[in-house]
Length: 337
Image (cartoon, rainbow, N blue to C red; front, side, top):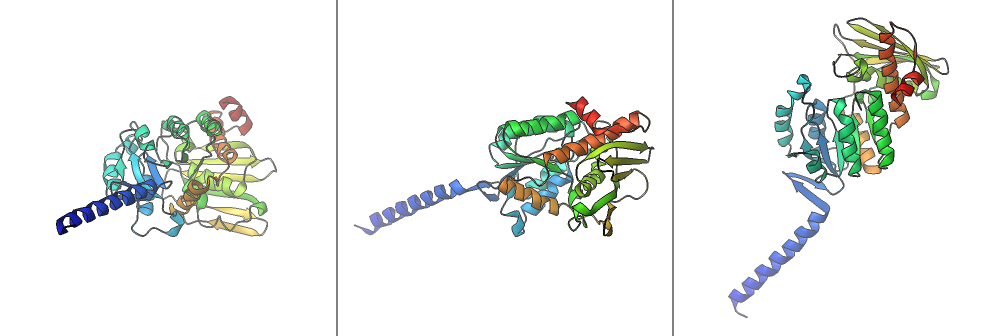
């Protein structure tokens, strides 16, 4: 065999072996606009109208991500997202450019996105869109975390969880305030009451507390657990105070503020003394729980608890409409069903 023939054969063998190797690699990894993610760990984002989307992307797509994130990467995003809520919609162009800097591909539709990812972060800020968007994801058989608010009506909350049952895909939703500093060390069985607070800005397209007051409701239920019977709401232009009475006689309150310098926190009353909550721990403790869910399919927040939180907020709205009268959670759930 002459030298030229041998060189050609060696080149062909090398190219063939290289092709086989790349083919095998393609079965386990996917390259998308610079992001390399293992099959099963490709994250899609629906909604680039919230800072949560860019925050999660920066953490997961970091050069040296923490081991807790188990190799999950954001590979594709569908930007929309709010089109009607100006404060959200105006963010989309900038956030598109920001996630692209982290190697994220932009999809033309949710269907397009679902073909490229294994799990989904539903981040759309407009809760009115969540029911339709979540069902698309569930039909595709993919696990999905739905950021707050899970929906913009109690009826839609119930419908989303019914769809979760129908398609046999567990899901969960949570505010990052569920993981605020101080909560983890509290013995829940010893909690006798709690007061929590957060900003509570309003958005005309959503029930009052669904939009932002949920950041006070979430830690309240995290420490108190389920079993709230009724609520009473005091409302002024600058403040909301909602008092919940639990079936066992315990009382929990939330304060939502719209004036002055606001923050997040609270105090939990226990049999062993009082525990202060805060400061806010950021998004990462929630993201760790989301990744655990993506990996195992086990949800850290039961559907019953999320449903009860939104019934609490809907009952608070009804109390406001009735001038501060007590409203049972059972009554608003019955109406929503």
